Image 1: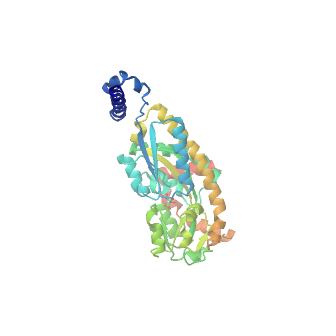
Image 2: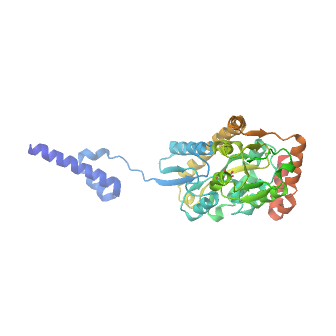
Image 3: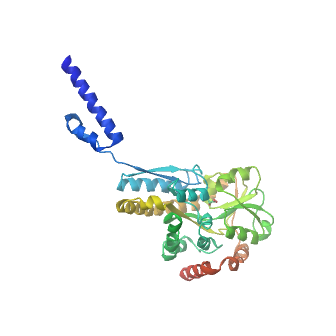
Length: 350
Ligand code: TK8
């Protein structure tokens, strides 16, 4: 009896060492453990840093699937970072999440380039209307020298730009109007992202644009604060805008890249091994996200119709008019360094 009791006590003691060893993780406890045979196989406790990543879109969108891919690929390489994902603006909107990266209150996010222009003007260049001819052209610029220069330019303001993912070509939706020509745009109240190029483009198209955070958009459409909005097909579908919008016009007026970014502080505190793993995982996730996103933007227009929306293709004449009106704003924004960047983009796209 006594022996059994002693044994139990020893086991309990040993267990408590394991527990305190895990929690405190200090050398003194580890020394104690060496005297107790039972705890020879104490699991190695890896100290994990938490990487909270937030986005405005929901879990169904390819962007979230891309983040899940990132997490998986990162954990295949290292076990020292615990990635935690937050969808639906749970950590804030694009702008406040970027501020969170600067302050170190969150670690990662993946905004469109449009709101990034509020932090670094140069980012306006990617949001010029009808600039990129197709996805391949966008990849070429974004994954090339110009794209890298702009990512690097975020470091001094506390943000490590990793790589570009894809939001995609934006299309117009609205509640009541069958938009087929410029004339149909007259006076439409359109929510845009918070970016002066977008606002100017929609004013030039005859609409009445209002900037607004994405998280407030569905309610604004529902309550008719605005008549319409513009986003790629995948977002229109996965965010169920068809419940509050009657018409999608395939304007493809601006190509929106996403920038997958983390706080510079988190990056600087990472070991070289961790940094390599983060970059590798971000690139694999980029390719995965772009592929899913392109499939979604391609296939979901039909689903919008199935949900009761009318999806309108512009005639070449109407399209030309959209291009001409929207591009009339180029001189106003192509100034200084942005003009240089724009020239380089256009030259490389040729
Ligand atoms: C989501 C946004 C969204 C963007 C917008 O946070 O705001 O319309 O297209 O996808 O980044």
